[in-house]
Amino acid sequence: MSLGKDLASIRKSQNLSLEDIQNAIKIPLNTLKSIEDDSIFSDKGKNKTYVRSFVRSYAKVLKIEDDEIVQALDEVEEGTYTGSLIGDSTEDEIESQFDLAPKDTLPSESPDDDKPAFEETKPKPEPNEPKRTPPPPEEDPINWADMGRKFTTASKDSRVWLVILILVIVGALGTTGYIFWDDIGSIFQSETAETEQPTTGQSDQNAIPPAPVDSTAITENNETETGETPAAENEQTSPAGPIELGDTLTISVYAAYGQLEPVRVTSDLNWRTNPFWMEQGESYYFDFSDTLLVRGQYSRLLLMFNGHVIENPRQNYFNSAFNSIMITRDVLDQPRYLAPPPSEFPLSVGPPDSTVYRIRL
Image (cartoon, rainbow, N blue to C red; front, side):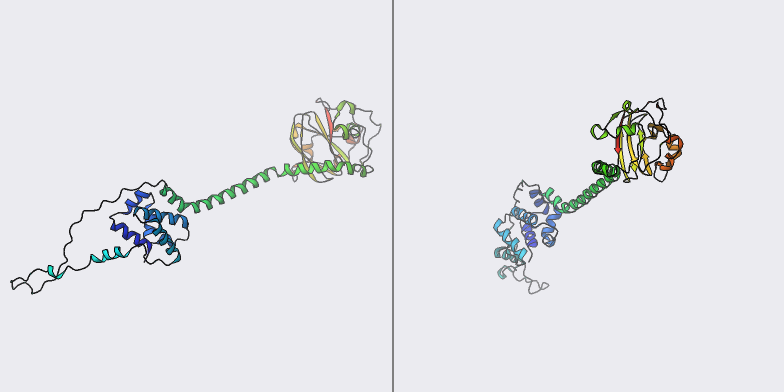
């Protein structure tokens, strides 16, 4: 015995079609068919709550008491259903349709010799009963058709959208990290370098050679408090003879012809690439030992050492391996850069408006 077949039998006995049931409770036709062939009970992917709701709505149209259908559903889940939904009276009525008519209704023997002596009894025709009009469909406030569609597709759609969302988030994070990796790392590196200045300044004091008498030497004493020094205060009397290169060298990056957005500088003192946004007229000092890398808007900047402008640094000292201008100790160990700084700025653009020490060890 199966609950679905019993429901189908009751529906047919009431002269109702599946379309009548569908119009009454708005459940998809394929769901109604799965109820009658019992496949809905064996589908593990369907939610039991929805299954019970579908069956109870089906039974409601057939005028089956709610307690009876609930009991039948419980028996189906336990595997003990034996057709309790159909009573004995219903079964007797179905069986009575196949009984033969009583013997006293047999026709009398005919004197015609051509006819057989006995004729088969025929069932007594039942009186025509008026065709039962199906009850008017009851409107169900729940849109079961829409719920049925969601029931069959929600589980698949939710998994697909979850995977798509995860891929989008991972892709966005990866793209952001790839694009801004240098800037993010440089911010932390720049902060670390600045916090190390107070502790390393005294320990390396003996290692710094006597600075040349130019803007670099003057601003070293005032940078800790002010951070910037007017260019006019950097003009001092130059020594009579050339200087000698010490263990630590200082290069000035001068934003002479426009803003630098940004210029990236790498010193061999820590081999960290730091970005610096410079306004036009600003000059930043950077210490290094043997190698300094500069990458940025080359047409807007000047590189200076000991008050002298380094000529054509991009054409003469560009290193394709680092994609940067590479200034080394050998480049600066030339008489023209070791000579005393000129008394006046050598170019018409004029000297820097202010100077800031950015990398100083």
